Length: 186
Image 1 (tube, one colour):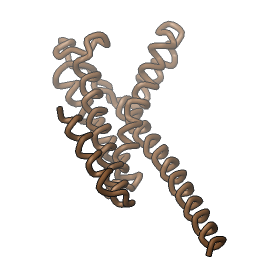
Image 2 (image 1 turned 90 degrees about the horizontal axis):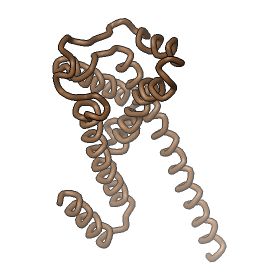
Image 3 (image 1 turned 135 degrees about the vertical axis):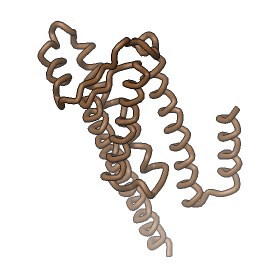
């Protein structure tokens, strides 16, 4: 229902205006919608996905690691025993899981076009996730997860910068082509 209403509003806006500012607002709205769906999926996956072993109260004791690189090193040293899948899911999943965080925040608002701000917000969000996992005994609170999530946020921001650069170059090329065509006609 919310998505249908959102889509209908955007269709109406598209019919009423084709301006550059309209396109920017539309991209921001779509980015916001995708970001909200992403956050909801992330919360579900991190706290409620039983198939991944995440259920509230899963552990009797609090599980935590405050020593940097302990779990990363453990996964790497025991990669043959644990299997590639487990290693990639843990290490790569923590990075990949936060790529959208770094990518969509600067799409949603101009106030978050700074890499430092976006990365700091990703680190803060990751710390909150880890603390909630600790307090609810859903998973372990791991400083390595915070580091990998922050790396994923920074990588997502870099991906945003690349896409934004390509978009700007494409638009500049299109403007130059139009100017050249106008000079030829006029």
